Image (cartoon, rainbow, N blue to C red; front, side, top):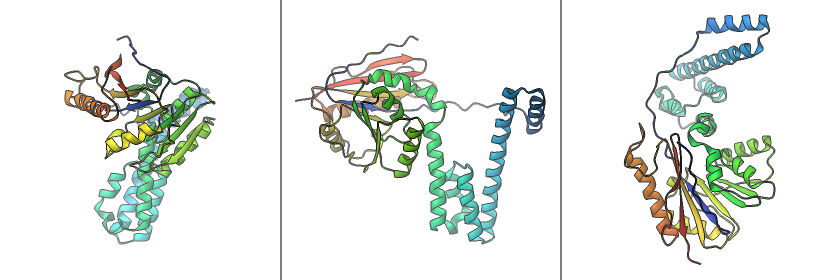
Length: 330
């Protein structure tokens, strides 16, 4: 389906709510691929032949399998140590596990063998490190590009060079880094999040990409601590649902925007072919889509005087991004 983009930008503050509602796709069985022995033979043959592309593919697959086995072995070691009452050694194994690549903190917290260790500071620190690894993987996984199409989101929001932007709930900087490139060296992106350890990762990624126009800052859950009238655009990606007092929060967002008469309020839904339709894609019931509309409508009522153009959209493949405009008094 061809993409249609309808968006409105004024020389005023812009608030972009990008609400990501991810449909749960039906589980599909994946081919486990060749076994380890086959991969080892393929690697040896490719190295002998000097076919380094094939050799690299085989080596990556073997490394991934070795890592998985290593993680499983460490988990079993920690659990057995805990069962035997060897608390220090169990905690040693858990700390090793937190560095080895385990993502599933729920598995660690639910394991009954660790019940007596759950309040121990070392257990909590290891669990937090495992959670962080899993959360960062979730934010930066390659599949996110395919179903969220960030380039099209950035295009729709139509950033201009020199803009001052706040990315609230910036996480690892998945959108922050793209916005920073869009506004250019003369622009500034304030990357705001409630967790310092997440922003540490963001700053590392920003530095690796050579971006010098990003400023990371820790804020509280109920206050983004924006400079009064100091921003041209505010972006919130999959963050709005965490805000408890949304009316109060909306007033704080408005206070941070440069004075003007219009805001863009964007809402994105991923996994549904039509935004606001009566039905949805497989795994994306219409109720989820309506919920997205209701959230946007409620915020339009709280921060503006009604929606002039509530659901302009991009449609393409399985992605629909709706962009609304609210007229703001004075």
